[in-house]
Image (cartoon, rainbow, N blue to C red; front, side):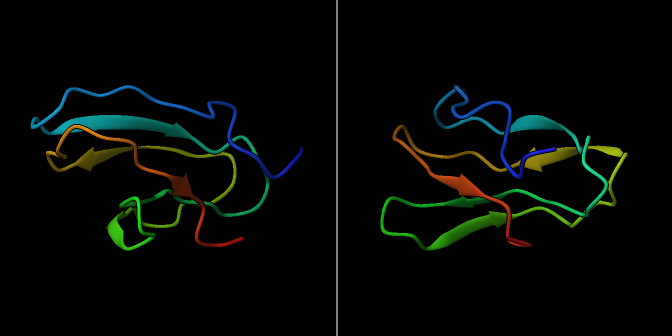
Length: 73
């Protein structure tokens, strides 16, 4: 499998906590880190093993665009 998120963009409500259902279909461990527009980390989910799923509880974020990456790669 390629090292990439299937979803390149997500939409969530502004100013409300939300969830991300994360399905790691790779054999390697992965996670999600959300950054503010300047690149500062505002959320880092625990790393999960390949072939497992988790639900990340994301705190409320102000309206805007937030890059997300895997911190393992």
